[in-house]
Image (cartoon, rainbow, N blue to C red; front, top):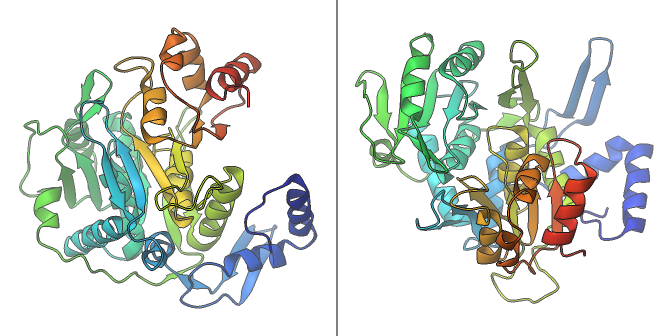
Length: 400
């Protein structure tokens, strides 16, 4: 089994193997993960019902694969590298050990507030490290997370909370987005007027603004974290247990909740991340500690790309994943390229919409930053048009 495809010939070989015998192909890959109990059958399917089950009766917890298994080999490697909206604010780096502790602590916060396996928990937060921490904490205890993009209206948020019957909401006081401040807590308060299932709202202080506070339901993130330990054993999950619900945008009708189960999603998220982006834990450039690839997907965790290729895929692979709170054109149109140069990003994954917006800006915003660290450019969200790709390839990829 070739876990890391390094050539076109190897790709063809693995592709043919996956088509000829998909069960054997994915069975072999799945064995490289931590399981509490091995599966009985790799795949069971029946299209009349329809029913598709992966790794039948296998037991695991995805966070042990995202975090615990890396503690023995790379506890001090940066897991999340957070770049704030304002470049004057300090970058935050969380090692795998630190992330493990914070996830375990917040998992205990959720349990102390009554959360248990199978509960649905809504996350309505900006792109801060705590969003990833809360996401993983839900998975740690077997709760099903439903992340809602923190730009949706109160009605859109309420619709999603009610549909999933969430009993806990996690939000922030406000958020920064470019030059704007967004009243996150106020939107949540309005939404909760239409929701009867929610018993607890955990609020992170991001801007420190004064917000309405209901002692019957609201709790401060930091106060709750101060009460708990950093030790939280991972809940045993069946491979087919739900991991998360993510709603469609609702642009063509009522938002539809798409449910992803645990085992199959985990195996595919890591394998696709590792091979699509050619992530290297030990780059050819050197064997020095800290020389591993730096990966950055500019998406929001509120969308499936963010779930799979900011949080789960990179962390399963033991990568360093960049989270960015801001927008590409603030404080100027060089913000993306400043971050690439600052952190020597090797793999950059963004959307055609962002590329087209930056194409319209002065090219000097690109040229004033040193982008030689880049080795892989990705585009996601829609088919990229020729002009955008040519600009991206020439000016960002330097024609390589």
